[in-house]
Length: 389
Image (cartoon, rainbow, N blue to C red; front, side, top):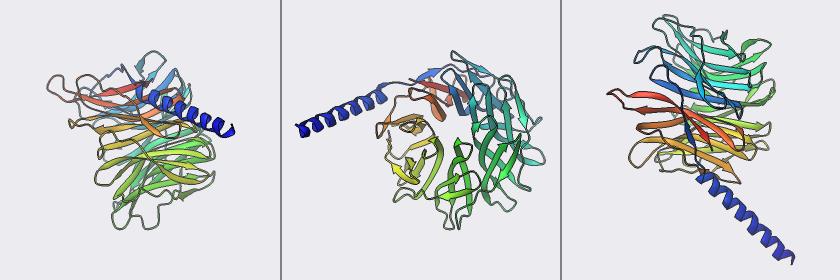
């Protein structure tokens, strides 16, 4: 009787798991309408502190078809997206863009990126939204370098961590980490792997004010590109062991999400006779590779991930379909495996991709990115936002 009961229970669990995976694959993302003041326009990241509040950032042209890039921010209020007024710290022929955003509450967001100041060079950019107005913050820059910030995570309104990289006068690329605390930004030391000729961080997630994980890539002396993971324990950054897949000729991590101080998921891609999605899971201090889905093998990439709990994650990116077009890619982790989701591409688009995702609950996500259309003889890039389910 006990064996029968256990067997029946296992069958029930397996049936529920199959149903959950089938639902994950049949529930669809829905395209949302986003305003575009000027084109081209790109969303590069999103952050949703609640089911009715999201902020997406990126850049657009100062005027249609101009060469000048200016920062872009839009906000979802539960029913529609609207453009926010974002200060542009540079003018004339200089560019500025926002690449990452983190909103620890519905009235607090920090966005990071980069700006060009001719003839001085490239500098980091951070802006803060207090619930009504965006304002530029002062950030330090390593002397004599070309720095950029690509991602930010705020454990609270008063504590944030931003990551990226900088290039020195000799062309060497190194990790860049800056922390916001006490009302100022300061540079933190983040080591590069031994023997690295280049090292850069692409994403960061802070489960608390004393626990962060940052991911990216580094290049060794032989020119091999490999995954990079570093952890912050409240005082120092240290490199963690996260081996790439066996046989990979190159690998990188583009996004990370830590729903707790002991559990994280990172995503990216690796090359092994083609480009393949990559997911790695951190638990009990150990990183392990998770099998991911690839709609068309050898052409799939994951750029961002959001974990609403320790057992539910959503990752987004793009892949090249059988017709040779780049299209959106979304996958969901729940119940022990990754499953493909159905994500549409805007009608008339020639290419589309997700760049960021944020899931304020286990049943709701917002993915952002961009798509190309060909309306009147010009390739126009538009912002893209989709909501799941």
